[in-house]
Image (tube, rainbow, N blue to C red; front, side, top):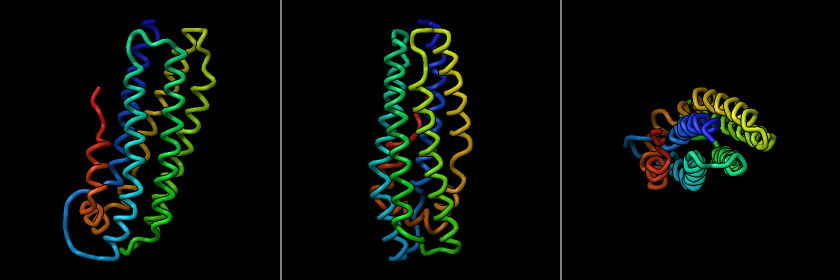
Length: 196
């Protein structure tokens, strides 16, 4: 089974990098009072928190399935479900940011639209990874390992590219308003990436 194990570990490492994207929606710091912005932040944070937990659980499932004795079928099933969960979670986050409306800050509309586009794009990317995993041949060890390598490479790209619009959304006043929300604080601590 050693053929897939190093690849599984790469997959798990790449995935834990993806958890960083969730952190972009959790803000940090404290600051000024703005009821409208606080209300917006509370709505987004309350909706994002369960999704952050879902992504964390999906990451944990993949980490757990990277042991030496995992069978290809088990790895494929676990990864497929994890990618499905992540796709749904990012889609729900995008919907939450869209539903909350435009934050009451300069360039709020552009920031909101860019963040929603980014979250929807992440959702599509994880849905695509699920399809790739589902198509892997578990009967052929070498082919399976190669397929996992390709998926790990995609994940690596995802974890490096995804979160610019989210970071922009949560800069300044928005970030301060989000940091005041208990649900964003707990999302931040639950979604921090795990070292591998």
